[in-house]
Every structure is written in structure tokens, then in C-alpha cells.
Length: 310
Image (cartoon, rainbow, N blue to C red; front, side, top):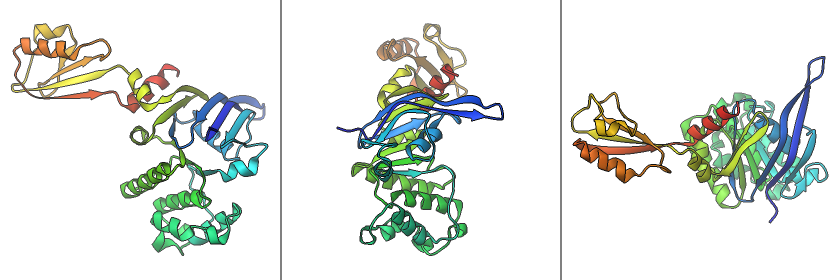
């Protein structure tokens, strides 16, 4: 099956200043995103994410390499490639002279969508813009403008939807509505490519994740496999009576005392046996009233990988 997005040895070099000093924004990116995936592209500021998206959208020229959308090469089959992708940019850039409805109708016209096939009213309703449909975009709040950008990306029913920081600066209600709708699109077969600094969103939504730093892909795998790389877990034992000193039998397994006088034990699941740890706790004579475990999340993995190559 043809990949939704195929990127091979993609490079982009900018030349800065009067001296035209070269700066490599992308250093040979390789990515293959399957159709129907919910894919996360993560990275710190300046990592190259927006450059990559702009190349896919036809807004920035690549230096070398190959990019195809649904099998359409962005150079040789530009029109078909652009019809296959909808991009929600990070910047709030809108034509302030048009109403919400006019903006969607004009964008649909750019993509050659026949009037009878347009979904303008449906998209306006889904994005919560019904009461703003006849308002100019300059009269919209920041959150409403963000909704309009998303709506514009959907007018031609693209099979690939790219969301570049779509929830930056929006309220919780919109964020919830947006993700419900995007998940529905994904269930119906739309491939989603998401970039976000809200890593909890990527952890909840994405099934595959690539991490990019300094213009290079430093990790790309299914979310569960990435999480397993960070081999760390913590066991918190809430005690009947607060501790002041770690029992000797627990000193050699890295036990510490929390501010509340409870016991915290950090361990590697791949090396430690939780039953042996609990047996030592029983032998220490401690009375446990509750326990909880915490493990590494996507933010821990992200910080670990990006620091490692910084």
C-alpha cells in the first residue's frame, strides 16, 4: 500500500546574511507514514518541524530529496499532491476582508471543489463558528481564528491533515471539541500528522511518533516502544505512620522518604522484581495503607532523547 507521506533523504539549507553562510535546517530526513495513522512529529523549537511541513505544503522549496503525498511527488505531481493534503499552520494568518463563510467558499474554489460538493455549512457548524459565519476574521478572537484556520484546511476533504500546533492559545472547550472531531476523521480513514508542544496530547492521541532535533530524526517508533526505552518506574508506599529513617533492609534498593514521610522506591522494571521489593518492605515491618506507581511518560522520553543529542 502506498504510504500517506513518504520522505526520503530530505534536506533544506538556508543561506544567511550577506556572507550567505549555509545553515542546514533539515539534514537528510527519512519518514514513512502509513495511511490512516495518527502520527506525532515532536521536537524542540528550531528543530525543523515547520520547515518540513512547509515543504510538504509547497510553501518552501527543498534543497534535495524526495517527498510524496499519497504517492504523488510534490514536484512532478504538484497539483495532485496539494489536493491530498490540508495544513493548519501555526501562525494565525487570515484575510481580514472576508467573512468566515466567504473564506471557506473561496478556499474551496481554490481547490476546485464544485459548489454542489462543498461542505461549508457543515464545517462551520462542526468548528463551532455558526454564530460567526457572517463576521469578518478581524472581528474574531484568537481561538475563533484558530477554528477558522482548521476549517479552511478541511474544505477539500484532504486524505492527509497536518496540524501544526493546532491548540496553541485555545481554550479547553475548543481543544476538547477539536480532538473529538480529529479522532472522528482519523477513524474514518484520514491520516493525521500532528506537531505539538503539549506532549500529553501526543501521548494520548498518536499511535506513532517521530522526534526531530537539529534537523535530524533521532527517534521514530510506535508510541509504546518509545515509552519502553525509558526503563524507569517509581513505587510510592503510603504508610500508616510517617517515616523519618529508611529501614536498613531497604537502603540498598534506593529507597527514599518523601516530604509526607512515605516511602519512595525507584527501580528498573527490566532488572528488578517487584515481588522481591515488596517482600523486603514486608520484612521491614512497615504498615502500608496505600500504594501507587508512576512511570515515565512521553515528556520524560522526549527530554531524555533531545538532551542526549544536544
